[in-house]
Image (cartoon, rainbow over all chains, first blue to last red; front, side):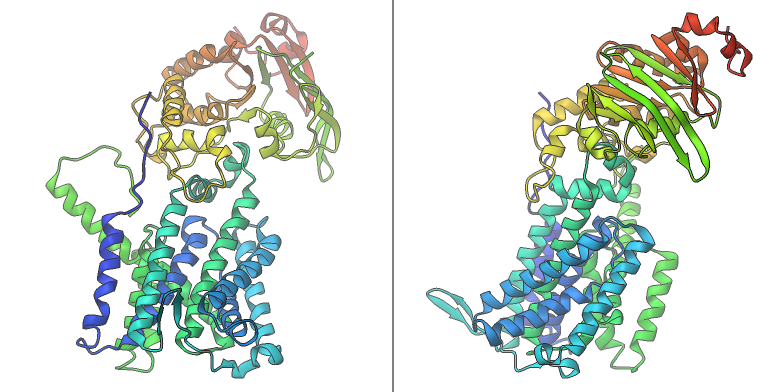
Length: 337
Length: 247
């Protein structure tokens, strides 16, 4: 009998990226940056990885994902104020609330595709954003939810305080490790491969027996729930939750991060994109208030000349190097990195 | 009793009648052909039989059970697979994965979000068997989009075979193939004949007449004749139509 085909649970790229992130607090201030930036980058890397499940892996153009991030942010704060002052309860409620929001949206849009899917996600994103602004008694309206606490990590016999940015960074890094591992397994699982098949050819997927809409719905729900987790972490990090994270332009940020980083060709592309986005914001932003103009131009240039993003550029360089050091191979198989 | 039956199917797009009282029956283990000129309604008929379109009237029966209007995925799960005239593959996947993803074993684990997708040696063995029967052994790791045209046609059938069907619909499988490719495909269909029930839409009359046990002729959305290849050759309706260019 022929041997099966295994995808390793841990890859060198995964371990290197985790280790690299683990060293960040040791040198980030020495290069003129600050600890909180690392926290932001990791939270948005989680968000972008979750978002890329929908855009990159399932090929579903969602432009209202900020809604789920925002629901998570508010849910974390509201759980803390009204349920229990527990980090775990807050994060669980953030995940559940965003997952519930994702379920509601998925029920309406999972039978759609292409431009109709995209427009529906924008519409739902705007609905949630509007609710966040208008439901003043719950969300605080445009003033937002303030005084959200950075609750300690209670692990039974030991408790870690997260009020310090470095401690929070390592907690968020642990969540990032867990989420990236979970998503890595997910995209290589039977579920993930079927989703990838649906992205390539929805019609054929139906004709080989798959309930396509159920898979599309499941992907959106998982992505929404993990975006909510990122949102919960974000509200904890900035000790507040505001409606602007649910707005259309904020939803656009995660699309930019994912595409700039190369989420369409690489699992790690969204992480690269989140790093590039925040470095651009702080480094170009130190020189000009119009940093988004320059980042936007960079985005346009990338889409025009290298739509595979930064990860695609590195992949191209690696392929060129490989070609010069080894004999040509016919029909090379593209590898997910 | 026929394995698969269509009774008085009627389909219209707006005010245009596309199928009118089409009745067909496909016997188990036989190879049936459907022929007709371009625009006759052959592919539309396939689309109704396999769930893509819901007929305005009439019934579709599989082993005596009414499956009229059921969606394609449900019909596929009941054991009806099809290939497409226009290539419909998972282009970013390798040849291996095109087959593997269509296997019922993969489908059964479809909501497993953590496990390995293709680690089971039995699944790999299954894929290899299908690749061998489709003449694609040795190409498992090639990307589907990089295959030559003839191999893509074979893979198109391979994906349908991976569904482990009772009934296989092939929509113009020789489209775009040269004489060598057609001969290879005829060999493949000949090997499959008898192991499952096959229905082929085909323009290549020589191909169809050499393989089919029974052929139905569709013209203007209606079945105008049916019979064995020998009977059809003698049929004046077929002879009078532009389908009569048979040796």
